[in-house]
Amino acid sequence: MHLVLGATGGFGGAMVRALLARGERVRALVRTPARARLPAGVEIVAGDASRMDDLLPAAKGCASIVHGVNLPYAEWDPGMIRVTDRVIEASGLTGAAIVFPANIYGLKPIYDVPLPPDSPRIDSNDKPNRKGALRNLLEDTLEQNSAMRNVRTLVVRAGDFYGPGVDNGLVGPMFRNALAGKPIPWFGALANAHAFTAVDDVAAVAVGALLRSDRPTYDVLSVAGDVYPDAAAWAAALATAAGKPSAGATLVAGWKVRLLGLVDKQAREFAELLNQWDGPILLDDARARRALPDWTPTPAAASLAETMAWFRANPTGPS
Image 1: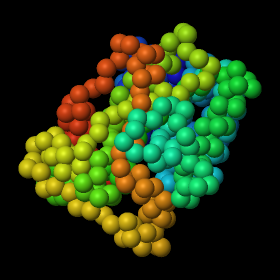
Image 2: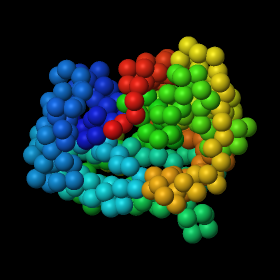
Image 3: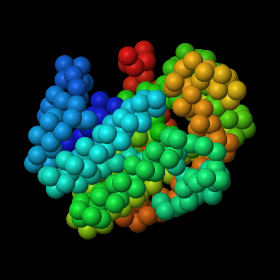
Image 4: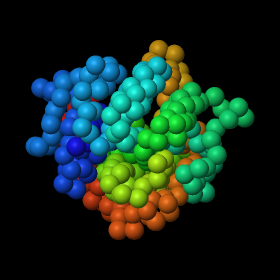
């Protein structure tokens, strides 16, 4: 049995699908079971992952806890810290392994060079990036806990990802605009490259590594995704998946994001991450491929088509 937190979201939902595909039993801790649309066979438990009274009973008897909780940017501090602390505590009490999805926010913005799992992190010489610093804190806490308690912990890193159930302020408008035949929003120079990763590939790597009997106590695996050379290439790929002519992309200027940030918390938080769009931040997935020699990424066209089908079925944004 595996406990998935955030099972109704992007990464958590992908982990549910990947675990079920491998014949594993899945339990999901959700706040509102009546609204949770999860596959048949998933055991649904009502509760809040930030409350030990809810999390610990749900984690009992589970081989792993998938930390798929992803709060809105403005709630990361202290929300993500609190949930991660609870996951660590529950893991220590039950012996369950931890699976945590990581991003590139805390990495030094080095462009065009594939970065290994232990690549340099942001420091005082970089632009202030509270989101990256917080993600690094969470990863450090997980690694220290793994060493102290001998708790198996797997961190799977990817850049901006998309897929069924991934409906955030970044990719949601892109896919919906493509379906409507409108230009997609782009946050760097239109000529800049950017990498996108299918969330189901991230989950497939996570589950494959999780189920290995010889996995390290603490491990970080990266999933490279696909690099699109410019905004037009990404817009064309989305248009093909939508069955529409490409309307291209429209640049959302950084100053507009910062100006909106004066009145909108999410925009203010996102403004810190705009340097992620100054060039492609690439990940080296050689370690993941060595650990999982039978794994092959899903062709991007297939992942995009599946994602577009999900957006057709979910025409409005998250409530």
